[in-house]
Image (cartoon, rainbow, N blue to C red):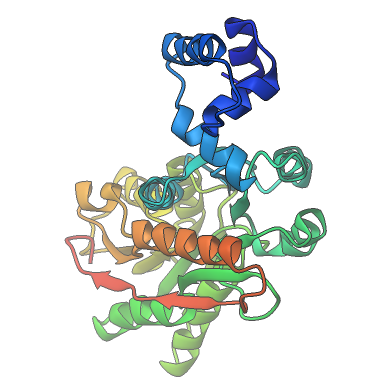
Length: 323
């Protein structure tokens, strides 16, 4: 429902509706009652609309997610929405797929003043193009940590987390540790592989194998694991997401092998899926990442000249039956 629709229902001008919402005493009593009646009948929120008119803000945040089907992304969005609503904001969700044209369509909301700021979860490689489209609008990059540039961001230390996961496997006696990774356009994929390879080097392990999944689905994880099992199979696998790890577990079981006796498996993200299948994983504080992204964005909205902030959040290694 728009202010124009309210004016149409009440049979008055848009300017009259605006004056009513701002409690102007220049409106005739009869017209005021007609406007208020139209608002009641349409279940509109006059206080919110009045605030928008007074402050020239929409109190809407655009959230651009690379893959809403990813359980980790979904949890981050829940944190974003919770914190936004706590501060009187609503979110508009765009599943961009890290496609710049789909992103361009969503970002048109900025120029129309439909949203006050944006939180992105797109691939790090897309940031230069996004920066051109977003310009000076308030912006926070979420879960893809940027160690340089003008955009504020929040995430975890992916290198440290992956090093810890792989070290746990090596210290548990695993000597043929493989990795299932994803798209290198995402910085987390590059950083987690860096952590994996650094441990292989430090532990002086002769075996090294990285299989790249076509997406972050369980099926893609299963296909990647099947490829790893073809020749000289590993005795442990580190996957960059819980969904990929779940697919790896399925492929191992279908091959007649045992987890963890024959092959140990570690995932990443700490989603509910990992708990359901008793998967050892690196748990990211997904909802807290979303909440912090909103805090950073609102500060930027209120203080446009505020300096860039980069926030590293804690992660946790959770050991379960898969190792």
